[in-house]
Length: 535
Image 1 (tube, one colour):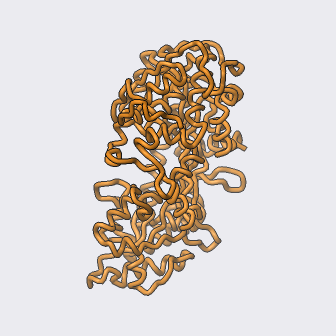
Image 2: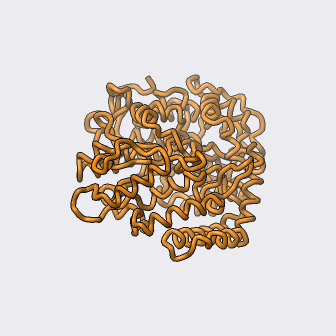
Image 3: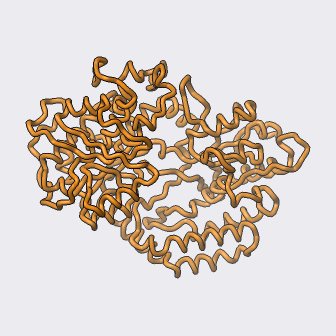
């Protein structure tokens, strides 16, 4: 048991825990001294559970918090005692994290451990001598558990944190990204129009969408329903093998989805559906009309019968007492309980050439944890920081205790072996505790899956791992800042114009030519230069 019940246990504890977790990765030191390379692994004790070294280090950690963290919280105290360190938490407002950190960096204030959002920032900070290199043998020697778990989750994970062949960050994982986007139908509408199961082919899908639009599935005697809207369109693109704004491997090369000839076929279908009023004419404004941004308001209000908005956790039913999320399901349950209980979870329909898919995230996100450059000149201190971080991930229960607090006091396992908050802590604002906003940078997917319990089981049983199309470009391209804004605008205008009929289908070829000349060819070149380094 990591924590003793005799320890002080206020909500701040948890906040601190989490902060520490991110913190742990962060080191301390507020100067930007470049120093020498960390070189060989330190001989400092790498077992986080053994007696700490005589030197007592102070580590500064830039926590990404929605609320300030109590520097005297019990978890902070516990960690300081356990690892023989002093922890200085630098609270940074979550919504302005990168902006605030850039100001700190410009003034020479570089914490030991902090978050980096996006590969473009990673490259920029390396060029500005802000980040310490993380030699993998050094990491493995001082954080063996963390290293092993990360490599087990994805063998090439550290390639995604390299700049000029050197590793400068610990990438963040997101287990739930392995589940594709939703393909959810109004089951009560399906029953009304005489369809018994979710469509398996694009032809069957089209037939159902027309029924939703033309056969009064809500029974109000008015023609006011549509098959799909903004997000549902993705299943048509996927049935031809691509997501327009994603990069996909095609015969060993990365290609950009929006300019592939198959998209012309997909747009032809969508143009016909729009003319026949199968697609919501307001699809351009999206499916959400306020409130929780993840909720498909159009679906909840009975305007459309199919959606691919949000993620699995917004659509799942409540699976056990204390289960949360399920935002769209709960919103629909409040409006129409029968509709919520009859949801049909399908898979993306298969197109004419056997292809299928909707968007899927990447297991490795673009959020990373990095260390201040100054730690390169103090390898013993760097090693100590890694050892502390390793101790926070050396077991599933330790991971949970840093996430939720003290087991048996703040949380415990329920009958489904899922960690749930206890007593008064059931209604606590986790943001004030710090929670996952800090620790998530180092969350391990193996632990995330175990913690999700019935959610993961339910998702796998309902085929949420089937039919996902991920974006295979997992880095920022050098010329992206120069060309992307204009290219995206060009793409959006072309696609909307073709779907709505303000431009003929033949305009697609003109769009592709313009896209290539406006910087697209350069991005294709850079994408494949990067892709070659990953093979």
